Image: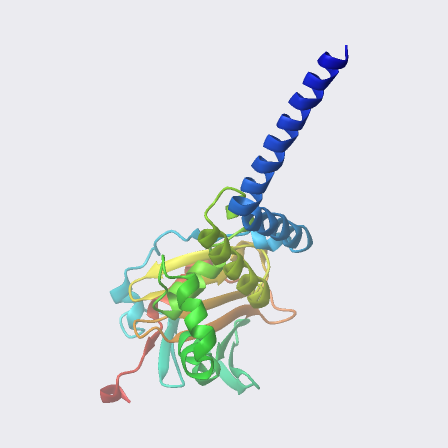
Length: 264
């Protein structure tokens, strides 16, 4: 009996030692990933919108060339602000009102477009390079496997990440990258509720927050061919029965462009 007991104790000790070693190996190999996976799901429980990733908008019904010029399209207005122009599909007169962040264009038919002053929009990558070189070097190391070379790519990576992408068994570098993007996504927030969409209409690419079908304000971030960030908000004046459709928003996004010096 004592001999059997000793053998049993020895087997238990061996099994325990093996288990400790395995746990140590797993901790060293996947400890960071496990912690980040738990942390990211905790963030998502408090901020469910973190789970939203962009869904591509279908191509607009109007061809880009037609959307560029109000002169060739009846019942459309061309708006010029801050050396930019865009075409709206509403023929009614409008008036412009300055706001602390940009200019509000109010149409007599009830639609309202807020165009943010482009000078107030941060060039995130340039600011990071110039103001915080040490942080930029850390940024480059974190994203070395998938370099980010433009503001559009940065925003696409940020809004395209979700807690579900953090796995306990992914690489440590991948976990750090995803965690950094989730932190940015938390700090950026959403410009408007009801989901996020992505678009690529000619040289203009970006993101739309909200759905016109819900009757709520729609926010849009556009990155043009120069990677300049342009922001717009579409809404309906209080008390108005006007509507804004997805085709209306597409028309503006598609036609938005910087006015060449020769046309100023």
